[in-house]
Length: 258
Image (cartoon, rainbow, N blue to C red; front, side, top):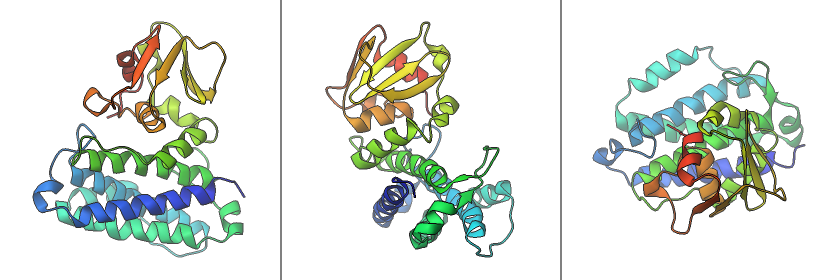
């Protein structure tokens, strides 16, 4: 079994419990406040996470021999979008809990053998990849919720480190999906702690090199947020800087987020 599957599931549980605690303290007005996602309110983020839980649960349950209702993803999104903000929040609490519980219930043999079909991927993928994609989504959107309430909010450092490891290997394809390397006029390599970020025709995260052109100085979680398009100026920790042939603003353009 992959060394990372257990860690991913533990982190998903941590994030779910964290968000439930946050939701329990929100009044109806706070649910419609802006989030860290530029076009979404806090309730919209929770709706996205809730519908994502429902959509991921279907192939996961099918892969483990559990009967689940057939359904179209668009119909799921439409139903969630039509909910009132409080319904969206409670829906995330309920569906997110079921998804995490199902993941936790998998035996070591199932965790090793299960493959899951994910939207926009041509073939079913191992649980490590599917659950890692879910953790990437959950970690970033948990931050979207919490930063809407506290501008100093950060991503869980353990999750950030785990996600950087996954983005350098099993989830490397995700950087090409979200990044815009053409935003830079020339190729470059950015040193960031144990990692080097190579930007040319594509974007790759590799073990630290010896001759970087650029250095990113900052925390692991801030570097992870940069890759997710979530290191805008108001949310950049003090001491974060980029030196060399490109600037932090240049890198923000490579990773615009949403």
